[in-house]
Length: 161
Ligand code: DQA
Image (cartoon, rainbow, N blue to C red; front, top):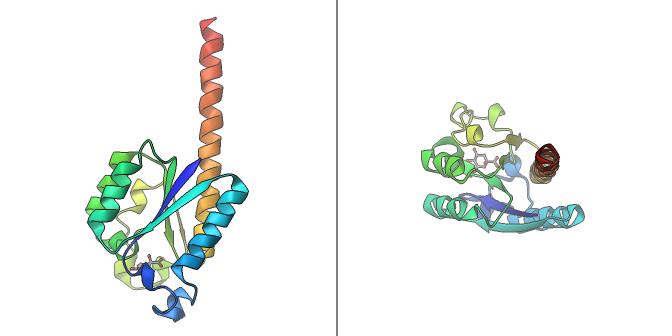
């Protein structure tokens, strides 16, 4: 199983960016922790951070057929990007939206997510653990779906006999 983790604008600055909100951990360290948890779960996790909306849109568009699911922290684009939402809907891979902070407990403009409605779930407010929890939830969901669809195939085969 392969997961693509995408991080949006300014997340490359984690560690020195508003540490009272985002903590002192760096993005590389978070992604190393996610990759390690992925290995424990038997899952490969690739990672890309970009400050550019178009790069993230293109990566999502290319993910179908290469990955089984997406972890996405769209950062500020969460609250503004119709393009990211449309990319998620077009690519049709299960995606989990991740936030370090609890966006619902912050400024009102952060209460709206344009991307969450195109995701299977959202994890927010647990700092770096949000990423680990999101990975666990996504893998669990993908495995359940995989098991259900192979059961379905078995049932179809049986009914053809
Ligand atoms: C964030 C929350 C967003 O509102 C903000 O613009 C970010 C980070 C988070 O992880 O808490 O850049 O996505």
